[in-house]
Length: 89
Image (tube, rainbow, N blue to C red; front, side):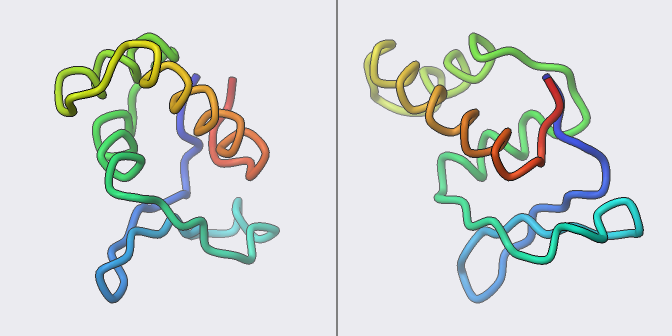
């Protein structure tokens, strides 16, 4: 899995949002809001190939959560990112 090129994480008024930049993202006419942990994952994964396991490990390294909770959160986040078209499998 990889974050598609042309999607940029920005901080706007204290909120993290993903926006599409460039002609390749012409059909992405919205902003995708991310919470702090999702923004952390985005920053760590940008420009890299990754798996759900990679994401779980990143959450475990940074937050005091169980592996099960991290895996559930990652599963939900991946579904959202795929649905919004910001990652490629």
